[in-house]
Image (cartoon, rainbow, N blue to C red; front, side, top):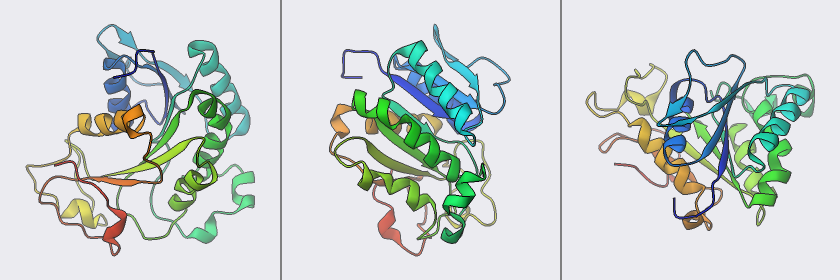
Length: 237
């Protein structure tokens, strides 16, 4: 980190898998980290002498989100980064994203994610923080995922919102309906630390000019199958 002060991150869906690896990466880089999920992690999330604060929370419910953010404020006194890794990031019909579906407590991504982002906005604005959404293929050109990323327009100049699209990471197997992952060479999955490094960079002062970006992490040589390749900006080779 180039900044001298300690920074605090909240990772929704950070108790296992890629979310957990991002938490461990940030802990190792000197961040204060809180992770939340509907179930506590099976084992402590640690990096060196640092340990993540794990919270049981259902971001599909407003009361749970409010309690979560109050706890983060008590623990760290600030919030510089919100990483959204919770929920099911499968493509959905945009018509499914409606005020009534949000009000009904639909826990499916991105409904709950939007609610969490809005609740965290005041503290993120106060700290000059940012939001990073983690999305897994397959991705369609237009889905409610764009409504999450669309917060970057609403919050322009206050809180930056960026999205990382991650192909299968080390140890994962591409599903048949994942055209990007299916083209991935067997020997070359994305390394989990690569994702953590890009998350941290997006939250850094060096990336203060980057917002509304969609960054694809894929192994060098992997085919880009989506119909709209313009949505993929950069590659971590």
